[in-house]
Image (tube, rainbow, N blue to C red):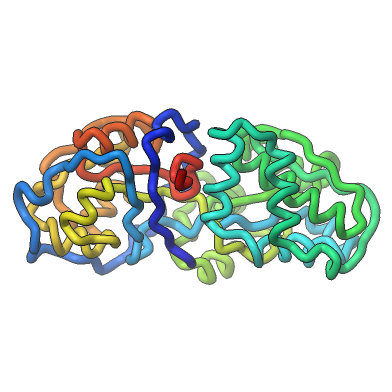
Length: 335
């Protein structure tokens, strides 16, 4: 899966908080460990207007890649449907998500306009297999999902379907609707999150998570669950919306790091200050995962928000060394 390091300009402090993706799952293995090369004051928080995301090179976070979810009966009756949606997956990147989210949340453009512009620039609709009939694409009530729903609908329209978009709320509401196929037939989903959701639906609320940071392993775990739920999934895209950890560009340059493993090697003496939501010190993919997977140690934790403006501001103002953000947040778009 493609990993990116992007810059947050000063104007992005007021960015809209995006949805948190994924449940606590596999925390991975390995990690950097001590032997820091830039300990002490060199690893203390450093203020700066621009932020960079450090690569999660040990796959601590689950693979929440964007993936098309389709009612199984609808897919069987419309053989041109999944190939059209897979054409979106083949082109969509995390950088695209960042830029589209920024266009809607920061530039105040409509999701419909942004989606249509992306499809025109990235998908060869002239080569799509043709289908017909009405298809309703659902979208959750946040920016990225609305954009993706319109992207799917535009591509399906180009493939001959009479496609429309409707907002259907959170997963507890839209997934049963998708499974029945009566009101919606297609939905832009997130691979790891929907895998673990269906796993709990099929195997009970206390079922251990089966998603991981490996895309193909998670796809393999999803397939039998999808069959039992009456769903089929297309190909996962390169684009992912998942937890990520950011530092100021000044800090990254000063310490010489671009990955979380490099951060552990450089700052393994426990001088870092971590910022994030209240549950971070207990959540396997937040502080415990950083400690166990990467060997990071922290001098302090500051309770902030879940990837929102409080966390980004605290990093920029030098109040924390590293903080939780989201990989497709529109605030990561370069100005």
